[in-house]
Image 1: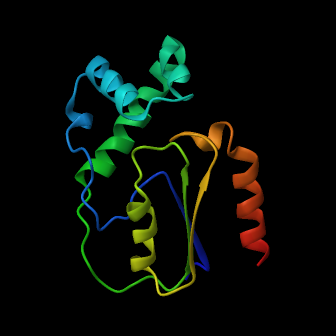
Image 2: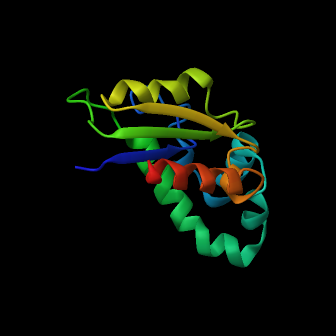
Length: 138
Protein backbone atom coordinates (compact mmCIF):
# COMPACT_ATOMS: atom_id res chain seq x y z
CA UNK A 1 0.00 0.00 0.00
CA UNK A 2 1.12 3.60 -0.42
CA UNK A 3 3.03 5.15 2.47
CA UNK A 4 1.82 8.70 1.91
CA UNK A 5 -0.89 10.52 -0.03
CA UNK A 6 -0.71 14.19 -1.00
CA UNK A 7 -3.97 15.97 -1.88
CA UNK A 8 -4.32 19.56 -3.01
CA UNK A 9 -6.88 22.23 -3.75
CA UNK A 10 -9.91 20.13 -2.88
CA UNK A 11 -12.13 19.63 0.12
CA UNK A 12 -12.38 16.12 1.56
CA UNK A 13 -14.28 13.63 -0.62
CA UNK A 14 -17.03 12.96 1.92
CA UNK A 15 -18.15 16.60 1.68
CA UNK A 16 -20.60 17.76 -0.98
CA UNK A 17 -18.90 19.41 -3.96
CA UNK A 18 -19.66 23.10 -4.33
CA UNK A 19 -20.67 22.69 -7.97
CA UNK A 20 -22.08 19.89 -10.11
CA UNK A 21 -22.85 21.39 -13.52
CA UNK A 22 -19.70 23.11 -14.82
CA UNK A 23 -18.62 20.13 -16.92
CA UNK A 24 -21.99 20.25 -18.77
CA UNK A 25 -21.65 23.87 -19.90
CA UNK A 26 -20.51 24.98 -23.35
CA UNK A 27 -16.83 25.94 -23.49
CA UNK A 28 -17.24 29.70 -23.10
CA UNK A 29 -19.73 29.43 -20.23
CA UNK A 30 -17.60 26.85 -18.46
CA UNK A 31 -14.48 29.00 -18.77
CA UNK A 32 -16.30 32.11 -17.57
CA UNK A 33 -17.69 30.24 -14.56
CA UNK A 34 -14.26 28.81 -13.74
CA UNK A 35 -12.72 32.26 -13.89
CA UNK A 36 -15.40 33.58 -11.52
CA UNK A 37 -15.03 30.65 -9.12
CA UNK A 38 -11.28 30.20 -9.03
CA UNK A 39 -9.75 33.42 -10.37
CA UNK A 40 -5.98 33.53 -10.18
CA UNK A 41 -2.80 33.17 -12.14
CA UNK A 42 -3.76 30.03 -14.07
CA UNK A 43 -6.54 31.89 -15.87
CA UNK A 44 -3.80 33.60 -17.87
CA UNK A 45 -3.15 30.19 -19.47
CA UNK A 46 -6.82 29.82 -20.40
CA UNK A 47 -6.92 33.33 -21.85
CA UNK A 48 -4.36 32.32 -24.49
CA UNK A 49 -6.31 30.60 -27.31
CA UNK A 50 -3.56 28.08 -28.12
CA UNK A 51 -3.15 27.05 -24.50
CA UNK A 52 -6.91 27.05 -23.94
CA UNK A 53 -7.42 24.69 -26.87
CA UNK A 54 -4.73 22.41 -25.46
CA UNK A 55 -6.07 22.34 -21.90
CA UNK A 56 -9.83 22.65 -22.40
CA UNK A 57 -10.47 18.92 -22.73
CA UNK A 58 -8.24 18.23 -19.71
CA UNK A 59 -10.10 20.80 -17.61
CA UNK A 60 -13.47 19.40 -18.69
CA UNK A 61 -12.40 15.84 -17.88
CA UNK A 62 -11.16 16.94 -14.46
CA UNK A 63 -14.43 18.73 -13.75
CA UNK A 64 -16.41 15.69 -14.87
CA UNK A 65 -14.59 13.47 -12.39
CA UNK A 66 -14.94 15.98 -9.53
CA UNK A 67 -18.57 16.80 -10.19
CA UNK A 68 -19.84 13.27 -10.74
CA UNK A 69 -17.89 11.57 -7.94
CA UNK A 70 -20.00 10.06 -5.16
CA UNK A 71 -18.22 9.24 -1.91
CA UNK A 72 -18.93 5.77 -0.55
CA UNK A 73 -17.94 5.33 3.10
CA UNK A 74 -15.72 2.37 3.71
CA UNK A 75 -12.44 1.28 5.15
CA UNK A 76 -10.08 4.14 5.95
CA UNK A 77 -6.76 4.50 4.21
CA UNK A 78 -3.80 3.48 6.35
CA UNK A 79 -1.19 5.77 4.84
CA UNK A 80 -0.05 9.15 6.11
CA UNK A 81 -1.72 12.07 4.37
CA UNK A 82 -0.89 15.70 3.65
CA UNK A 83 -3.67 18.06 2.49
CA UNK A 84 -2.67 21.35 0.86
CA UNK A 85 -4.39 24.50 -0.39
CA UNK A 86 -3.59 28.13 -1.07
CA UNK A 87 -4.14 30.70 1.66
CA UNK A 88 -6.46 32.62 -0.67
CA UNK A 89 -8.19 29.59 -2.20
CA UNK A 90 -11.86 30.34 -1.61
CA UNK A 91 -12.92 26.94 -2.96
CA UNK A 92 -11.36 25.09 0.00
CA UNK A 93 -12.65 25.90 3.49
CA UNK A 94 -10.53 25.22 6.54
CA UNK A 95 -13.02 22.58 7.70
CA UNK A 96 -13.02 21.04 4.21
CA UNK A 97 -9.23 20.81 4.17
CA UNK A 98 -9.00 19.34 7.66
CA UNK A 99 -11.79 16.82 6.95
CA UNK A 100 -9.30 14.79 4.90
CA UNK A 101 -8.09 13.50 8.27
CA UNK A 102 -11.29 11.46 8.52
CA UNK A 103 -10.38 9.25 5.56
CA UNK A 104 -7.10 7.90 6.95
CA UNK A 105 -5.92 6.21 10.11
CA UNK A 106 -2.38 7.36 9.33
CA UNK A 107 -0.75 10.60 10.39
CA UNK A 108 -2.38 13.70 8.94
CA UNK A 109 -1.22 17.24 8.35
CA UNK A 110 -3.01 20.13 6.61
CA UNK A 111 -1.13 23.16 5.33
CA UNK A 112 -1.82 26.29 3.31
CA UNK A 113 0.68 28.05 1.09
CA UNK A 114 0.91 31.59 -0.23
CA UNK A 115 -1.40 32.08 -3.19
CA UNK A 116 -4.85 31.12 -4.46
CA UNK A 117 -6.25 27.90 -5.93
CA UNK A 118 -3.24 27.77 -8.24
CA UNK A 119 -0.63 28.39 -5.52
CA UNK A 120 1.52 25.54 -6.84
CA UNK A 121 2.16 27.52 -10.04
CA UNK A 122 3.19 30.70 -8.25
CA UNK A 123 3.86 32.10 -4.81
CA UNK A 124 3.58 28.84 -2.89
CA UNK A 125 5.49 26.60 -5.26
CA UNK A 126 8.90 26.66 -3.57
CA UNK A 127 7.49 26.09 -0.09
CA UNK A 128 5.24 23.31 -1.41
CA UNK A 129 8.17 21.49 -3.01
CA UNK A 130 10.24 21.84 0.16
CA UNK A 131 7.34 20.51 2.24
CA UNK A 132 6.77 17.50 -0.04
CA UNK A 133 10.49 16.68 -0.09
CA UNK A 134 10.73 16.93 3.72
CA UNK A 135 7.64 14.72 4.09
CA UNK A 136 9.13 12.05 1.85
CA UNK A 137 12.45 12.12 3.73
CA UNK A 138 10.55 11.41 6.92
